[in-house]
Amino acid sequence: MDGSPSLETRVAALSSELTQLKAETAQLRERQNDTSGEIVQLRATLTSAETGLASLRTAADVTEAIRRDTADKIESDIALLKRQTIRLRTAQEDASTELSGLRAAAANSEIGIEQLRTSTGQIRQQVARIETLREVTGSIGRVHKHRVKRIARAPETEPQPMQPLLAQWPAAAPASRN
Image (cartoon, one colour):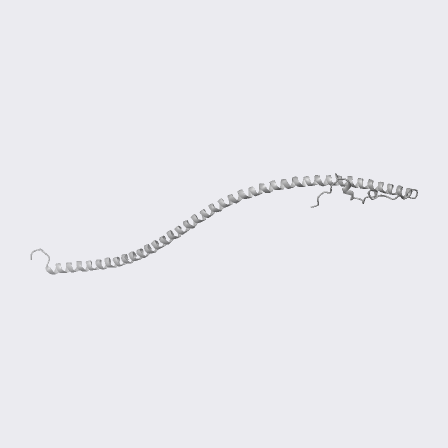
């Protein structure tokens, strides 16, 4: 035989190699199954992450919309407050002006009241003088009455009825009552 391995040796070597290849193939299949499982887990994790990211985006969009609405509302409220502040300042100025007018009117009323008190005092003094004069003239008339004879009087010489006190002095017109 010539130095080449025999067929049996070759078959044995090839069988050994085939067994070794089958073992390696089995290991590769096992690794592939492990890798496939990991890929499935990674895909599930990726899907979950994508779902979470979509939820976060939606929540961020909602939050941004709420923030914009809130900012618009705050801006609107600030504008309203500015307008109301201007109205209040105007109303306060009007009230201050009216209050000043009322104070001036009250001061004028006080002056008028004081003048009325003075006039009333003067009128009372005049009335007191008149009453004193009436009493004096009345008592004089009673004293001389016994001495004077009664003379028949004509209607035009009849004594006139007394006029009210204030009508006797037109300058002392009564103040209107309110």
